[in-house]
Image (cartoon, rainbow, N blue to C red; front, side, top):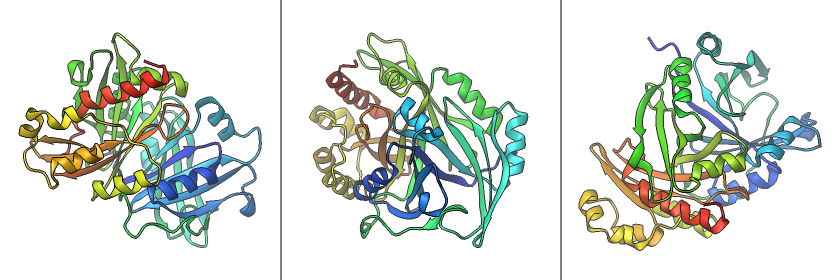
Length: 363
């Protein structure tokens, strides 16, 4: 019996310097729809919070409205970043008890929030760095997000077809990968889904190691990265330096039409990493990939990468960091059977990241 069953990701919660501007950016550039709001106008004296959705993906942006708040302190220390990877569970009390009995640190004890739309049970535990996992049961709630929030109009007119429909996985950068993988094994009954070591993720200059932990249904997947010995500073080292410790590095968003999403997001100002022409012209790649749903020339035009494993193939592309600090970025992923993470693309991807690091003077 699974002692820590999960229903899926509930929300990715960001701490940001200006919640309205962040919500506007993700509405405009990511095609998300604002659905809920809480701020000084409805009783929240310290922070403004905007809730955006795209299909089953929910982003929450928290920003301070005065000095001296906890969210303001977090943003000052880390820059804009993820403060909470909230997970929906069927029984918050049982999940929280199991987590604490197996070594988790409690941040918020189980409690009920209630309004005219019903009730939500919520608790929270700590994970790497200053990140937390809220545990949420909203099965008895019909409101737009949580009690205390009011429904809100979209900031801009959402696109006719959304750019992505779900959160595929959330990647954490840590200093001790094995310890945190063990944490998820003990605390949440997650199992290892994949492991990448040594030459799997290495370039001429830098390397990293990664383990992917996931719940039994594979609805919630958390890759964990740590830096490995290399000639120069790896992307993980750069992140840990600029974020000020461990945290969420990137969020992968599942899309049904990556070509259209990339075209529209790029037109809205989103910058993507550039994969070189040599990647697409490599005969070994073409032989390994075989037939995919679009000509490789169309992928090359947009710099989308492709990988195949025993279960199928996937298409993926990564944005550049979406804030001034070289920390949080996003991935778009379109899966056709593959359950992997693009192992065949790691070298090309990390060389592209290193070119950006070099431009920033951080390699």
